[in-house]
Length: 245
Length: 217
Image (cartoon, rainbow over all chains, first blue to last red):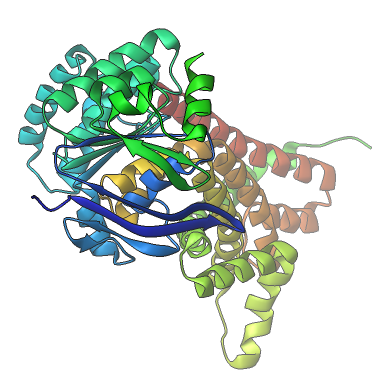
């Protein structure tokens, strides 16, 4: 049995008096696709943000390839280069073109040669179907295109794991499909993915494991087929009923 | 009483010289002030509490006291400790230290206006906080703060008239001494006003041009 790539051990997280994650643990194996589901405020996005320490945990520990993710900034920067993240609001750099957005980290963080970075970036742009937009600025693109660029920007660092924080929630309904397609292809290529989403179809099709959270604790987890057709917990049942309507 | 602007035309070169001194002092002070402003802003957003406090005190004192008092402390107060600054040094140090406090506030609000999500995105790519500042935040801050900065430049240029009181013969003091010999107050002060207006207008023209060019990119 292979060592899990990410180990989350008994983490807690509070914002002020509000405890949003209560003693949560989870292992993610290499190549695994995990979808986090749950009502808003259940702590699913916060867990994602704790993994690359955009939020600091109050208790417990998180390990990436057996390296503890803590306050050591140098080690943290290094670990972050292996963990790609895609945000709900794309968060592209508005003063840079598409290609500049993508090569920014390879060139300035990884100190990779610029020409090689551009070639690699063009390959990734092709994969997300946006080769013709390489010189556009983010504001000239649709939401779906921006999100695909954001995925390309994360992929340019050749991450070991990709975190998706509600990647389609800010999109117009007709643009959701193009982003999900890119994510499905990524999954097919064997990428390790942790996805927070409300897209149940995607969860069912792509996930190896679905984790349902409520009130900062894991209520139920399992394989998607079983999870969606025969949920055990009453809370899961009522959540699925509400969201599937 | 009849207005007589002939005294002005005869002495027009004095006004030009005075304006050049005003420009020289203002430009030099602004350049130094931008340095003070950047340092002040970095102090105020720093992770280190001590620096926050120092930056805060700087802005608090400068904004809370008149420029003229600050200048007089530098020029007339420091000699008591054996530090006799030349008028030019006192004027430029005073003006730039004063302007720097306002610029640090402008830069700080510019930094706060940059979308936090982009900073998170940059961090998630493994950038250090310095890289995030230099590569992601500052290019956007420059764009955001240009209109406010031009406004501050104009204020500083006008404030430079106060350094006449530490005996620098810039535009305003040139006018004063001309009145002492000609008694033509109205003519001289209106001419001084026109010269200030020419300089501030030039600044506005330049800024409009820069703003338009920045908007394109």
